[in-house]
Image (cartoon, rainbow, N blue to C red; front, side):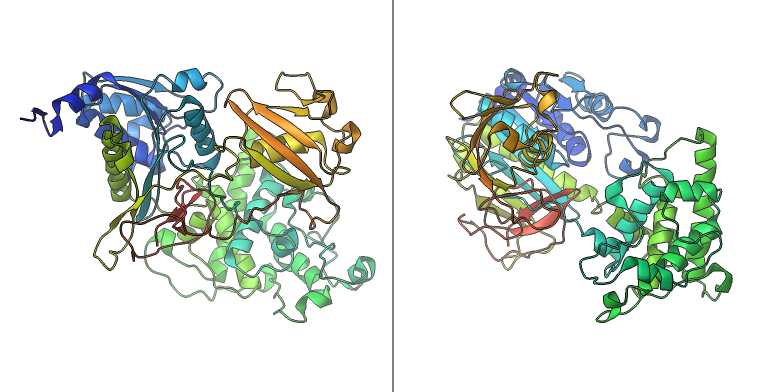
Length: 588
């Protein structure tokens, strides 16, 4: 006769009380997961999260209360979870999981790791640490009503990086500055404008008309001479946007006329841009009238009229000007979607630009969702996914990892009236540059234009997710190109790869000792990369769905999707879906 402890077999219940598990993330999923773990009988839990509690978390991260705002998520989650089970042994770290202190030996302490993350870099890192430590990982993600849970085990299943992930969508500078055609273009422009006026200026976030637009074939000097922009304050001046704004005392009307009249009139002189698209219509503060109709509904969901957004622009500039003055003349503000004046400024500026370019204006709620790259988080979705994580964890602890599944939560029932759709786990990809027996990639770049720092930061760290790479050239001499030891190879940073004899066909051995990860990089020299493209990974098509391989146990579920950037899933039988800041794939 089977002896039960609660609803679990005694052997399993005993295992829960003695094993150690790691929870990475104490946010929406993490709060639900921590509660579930202690109520299921897990006694030894470590939880890590670098974030602090924000007011916006309180509607769904129920372990937190208003009195906790500003405190460590991990620490408060621990304290709240202990109220459910005071006998549990929970250790909380207010830290980044990518800190070198959490090395392979640290991961080997655990029988199981559970991810409740919201960014790709951390997911990549935990994936590699679990592979190096040979510890099962349960990955998860939610996006509105959609969610997913999958199990990753070295040598048995796809790892998190087996399938290529689309890069976060970016837009050409000339589209943002000259020819916006979608609301998101105007919202990105408004966020850039905030930084140019009040924050840290970035040359890559210029907002003035782009005279280098490839569509143009005209003489900028001649065109500028024909421009009919005003010669008064507010005219286009070739100085930094912030310097000009300060010279006007951040006068809202002068800012308005420069951005929405003079710059637009300058754009209109770029004749070729408007031959096949509707030309923008400049706005002049002195000629605006209050013709707005009354609006109803919740404040954040109201779409104001033109005059309403003009007033919001004026008020937000005055508020931000006061903040700058309080902090000192050289102070810089940081844009935050949860800062009302900053959000008001972006909402107003984006909508005024939408109006100029004949687009339907958006509510503050819509602008915030796009500006913050947010998909509304739903507490019940997090709860369902957290429950599924525990169920998959119980299978692993029962020694039944072969019965684990990727499980997809859909918004609507499929043809078999199922909201939850299990899918058999795919085997590792032979071409994976992380979990293959000998990981190898080919990178196409120009060795005469690519500097060592670009290789380190943009390619190895940003693209391939390494933390502290060491690079050796396979040139028969063992030349060290990059060392993770501080200061050892800094002199190489601004030298071109060709300066070290790297050419077409060169091979680089890259080691990240923290991740216990080695990657062989084959260099393919080219001088034919597209404009503003620094490198390409050969054979990769991140915006295309990979070929189907898995064997779904349930099919015909309902597909739900929108666009974003990172992926908690590994299964290849999928359709693109978004999480907060993370694009994953959901079973069709």
